Picture 1 (cartoon, rainbow, N blue to C red):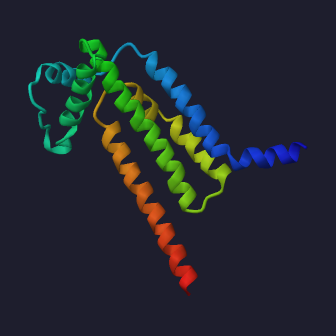
Picture 2 (tube, rainbow, N blue to C red):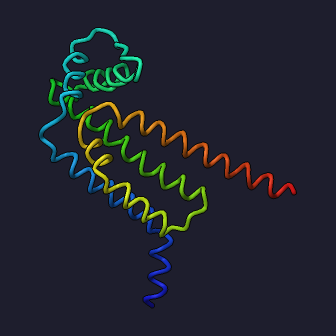
Length: 170
């Protein structure tokens, strides 16, 4: 009985860990009260901008993305001021972290690692301050990081599919 339970748990350990991490990270993110200066400076400018601004060369479209998210919230009525805009920014950063964790899970799965190894890697990555600290704050790095992880996950998936297609053709 115990051995059967262990096998069932090990088949889903990575998925369970991503779900558990998401809830824990959401709690940490919602309980944060102080935010970095870098993120706060964007909020004030975007709240009062009449058109989507372009950013610095290192992340050209970030302010435009933030503008679209915040002004969409303003149109719907969810964003009334700076505090509500900070929450929208925080949701973007949190979502980016979830995308990173799920993309990492899929990359490792496509590379052929077993579920317990994937869960161990996710536990290590998810407990790092670099990920938890960035996604609970409001700053630029989580969003391009999520895009990079998503691109790697798609690439790993297509590479695996191409490999299996070629192996079956032989």
